[in-house]
Image (cartoon, rainbow, N blue to C red; front, side):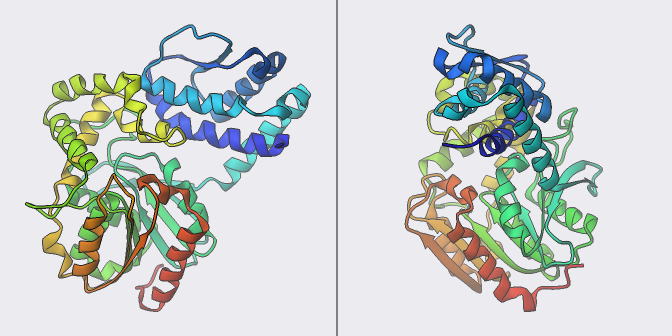
Length: 396
């Protein structure tokens, strides 16, 4: 049985994960449908109200015994996460109102204290990126290249895990997190996204670093290492989503998403038509409940979806085969046998064709398991980087 402090820490984290998507949705209310006994005489409503205030959630949260509205997939992704906070939480019925709300206030303060530092970075083509850093700036530097379009909350586990021994830096994809949305003329190529990596490094004064690419971020890391080899001492590539031109081995999921990205990238009108399909609850069928609010973020509005398609299609169709033979950095390549999202054969080929690569294939783990930051995975990353520090360019 969890006490107030542990429950409140989890609840604040969940609200932080749903907020990026919620901020983009037009709806002004979420429903949390639970049985009467799970409402604990109104205590659940009071606690969720306090969580909304502490985390700045714009929408109201209505705890109900029966639904009053039909949610879209986006609203349902949020509501399922909120509902999970109330189910199986026996302690709620035992908390006095002041105890529960005080625990939430303390948890929110702890979350703010350990949140990554945020820096606005100006790119060479005039955009502003939200960049984030954790750990000691005097430590060796790691720049984390996230999957395209994903809110930073998906990568917080890595920032925390690596921040004990490193200065960890990351950012959010160009244009997709601007308050007024992406601009129509925003550059979208892999080179532009790799240049963002260099602009982030420059903003933090990093002359060199280890670069860690996740999913499509692995493609951006490879392009940057190829064009700016002197800026990187080593790289690690995790569950990379790779293209090698004709004959590439890809999963059904990769082919389906690539086709969708091509359609959505064509025009805002086409993207609008396909984005409507994402409103259907069936869109959640294959997305883990815990990750759904983050994974769905770039699909939340037609404009976001269109620009996400432009950025991600560029990544998914970027032939990396010409790069690999020229990259001499020590590299760690990680995949799993059971990844049905990004085909492990791509990681095998990358490891074969890079001059100094070490392949690790986990026996199990889906594509999103890399964000679980298990002790095994974080130790794998830390041990590899520790072995390379002596060859990494200066990090200040």
